[in-house]
Length: 264
Image (tube, rainbow, N blue to C red; front, side):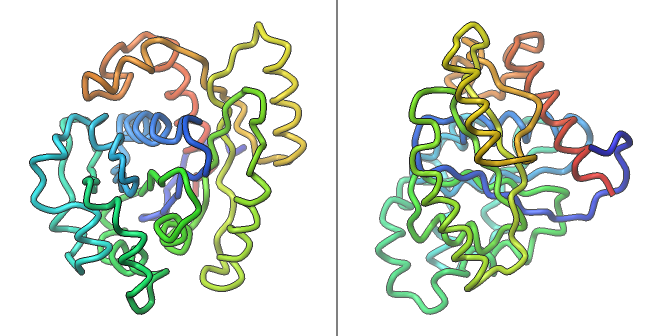
């Protein structure tokens, strides 16, 4: 790890991916982005999950959107016209809407269907230091679009039984995208979530994940924390909801580790 945080190349795009649900993708997207924004970096969250939890978690009403990631992905709308400033320091949002639920079927009929998102984000990526994409819990065309548009992939993994289930398929998909569409894509890192050091199972899972992703696992772990669970219902990242909670401290530490890894 690099100790000093130097200049960072603008516009790095990171897809937060795991085809399993409930592993902390949205929690990581929202809270890591907020923590990095608090460090003065300009951060965009692209919510491309039809559930739109990142949008809700940042206090945006999905029912009142004029333009969302659906219109950008399917309708040819410019990303800059859909991006919203949030109330949180240096954090912007490309929101999701329920319309995105049908996008998988609509994408099938479109030319260059795998690279729609890459084309859209290419026009705004240099307006930000980092773009985090909160992906749906599936390896369909929306996630393929995210992988084609990304520089790196971040994988949240919960410290529970069957944690690695399906990850071979995810890595196979990443390799296929690398071969066919995006030769420079790499693994950004693996985030261990829902960590409880009191459980023997937790350490067993950690050891297994480190064997699966050698030298790619962040040293910062995200604990089970009530405040992390409560914050989205108030439309806030945890650091704004409870600045001294264990969840806040963990995501601030993860942000420091992430920025150190991305120092110029």
